[in-house]
Image (cartoon, rainbow, N blue to C red; front, side, top):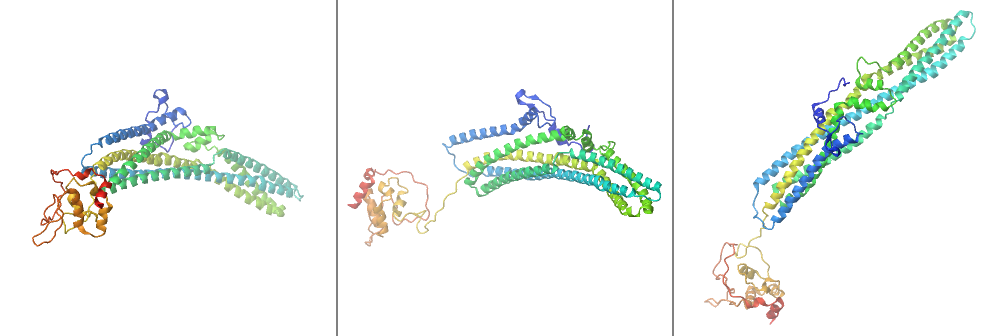
Length: 552
């Protein structure tokens, strides 16, 4: 039998058509009927859920080999250069990934709406059942206690002798018949009550559990999507600032995100296939599960299918109860006419009985409306459509989003690692002394002239290449650059000063330095070709020996 108002979507049919293969039995295909308690069925779903996990391991293996080869190639570094092409690819992949994440956010909300509909339908069904139980209990108590006691009191009143014995016997006969009718009506209501009590499912607890786990699922999905969006924003930051550190961080976080994406894809693919199997024929699974309940099969099918030509399983007991109440109403009207003439004191009891019968009859009509299939079947259809329309569609959008994000993050990790290795490092700029072109950057106060000279001379003595406290003391005491140059030329063998024609003493002439009259404006940082300078005999001394020489 097929449901009257439900038709499986093309998405459910398509996912249901995927073969269900069992790995343990040589990829043999098994039945695709929804059976979460069957081990073979769960194994077939696990096969499809394990495919993204296997792809994840292959991706990690590829990146492991790739980074190992990259480490080996780092021994021969390539010149750093700008990478506009790689930056464009990174931006393109990031934009596509953000689009995929937007689809994921929408799918997550759509799935949450569908599952919330299921919880709402369960709560409404529970509310309907509680109303039926309440009304049936009120009817049973009214018939069994209130009306029966009032009729017994009325029968006792009619036992009092009057002048017309025939009327007295007639009133007693009508009262006895009404007591019998009320008892039969109470039995009919008790039968309905017993059938309702067989529904031993706490729909409120089911709804609370559904809401709790759905909130956890929704929250975890939101956190994962926000994490992926943050990584995408880091890619934008690294590309815009051309930062090697940010791109390296993106590559590291991208690998973590890759693991999260493919793991989540495997879980959601497992759930999607199971949901599609349920949505192809939900009525069959529901009726099979309720077959173990004490509730009759005819009752379950009546509310699941709700065919127009199907009889209400509660129709007969409710009809019997209504018939007995109608007979009681007919008799009480006869009694009311006779009692008004012969037993006027019994009229208050008659009015109580009439009022109780009217209330009971209204309650029976309300119960008949509540147990009609239209009420509970509408809630059943709301739950099924919430799962198979909204939730399954949202789950499919999440599958597409996570799969696309997984591929794009893999590409971003690959491109970011290439960009990080090829990106040129930023140069440190120093403030240049405009008055002297020989000093392209600030030097220490100890050896400014020596550094300017020996920047193009590789024969700088060891004592001048090391921080000598003697040389530093010369600078700190302010004895000038001439004394520094004189001390330095003691080891290089060059002249200490130059005499001008007017007798003035100029800056020391260091061997190999330009003449004093040469004042270059710009400095070429390209080192000149090496010159043939005789070896310095003091280079073989240690630092301590140089210090002793300086002291003497």
